[in-house]
Image (cartoon, rainbow, N blue to C red):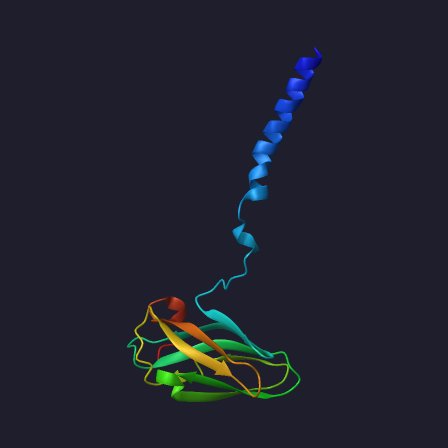
Length: 153
């Protein structure tokens, strides 16, 4: 009788471990941080750049769209470099403690001569002041998606 009880307990323990033990050993993708959007994210000093992407229908000129959050206590001038060897530079002023949406319908942030086809990436370098800059591969999308239809230059 004791042998049956011990065998039943061992079987129950084995089934419980077998049914739940996989989660203990398996890679969990939900623990990885990622950007749940079409654009990319970057941090440059006190600036948080979110949902950075470029909309271009012809691959020649593009509209840079992003949200910039200045978590610092000083106004900054963000430099955006693109093109062969960072030959083109745009400057954007972001006030301390403010967030700014760039490239919207009212005020597009035009990148001229990107020479990058939609569906590929354009290297863009973000930097301000003495903060360490960040070079990111920014996706170039076309305006075929309804949410981007009004953003193409």
